Length: 198
Image 1 (cartoon, one colour):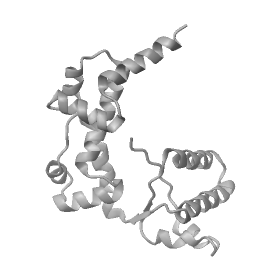
Image 2 (image 1 turned 60 degrees about the vertical axis):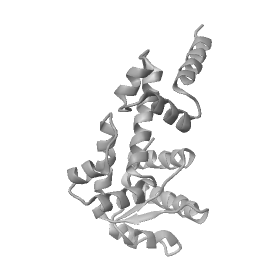
Image 3 (image 1 turned 180 degrees about the horizontal axis):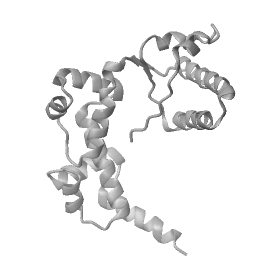
């Protein structure tokens, strides 16, 4: 699943950072993107939640904590991506993919967002780390997983609702992504629910 949190730094505040904050150079561009594991995202989220709730005089210290944590991640091998405002349309592309129930093609997205197909492919891979086709398939499989969790729809209906033209391809894609077939996933989930019921 795709999650993002955004922090805006005022250029003047960045200038005032202590010299030992080595990651200052990372802010030379418009944006710094860092792909995080769920665990890393959770640790950042706690600080970001605090940042939203604290008064202004406490925010500076929290921002230093965030930057310190960021520096540690980079030192431990995390690969940040610095980019500029010309790439921000990719977040709109991601929303467009998440809003549809069918496979999105590079050609239709490029036309919709008024860029060339090659630029969209390159920018999308830079930001997400995967191709448009892979990302779109993952989104539809996550929707299928949600339908298996919350409905009693037949597999053929879920296949159609999630934009897969072939049920066997849907089953194989689901198995490759989640390590279990849709039918086995539903049965396993039902057993868990049966056990939890008093």
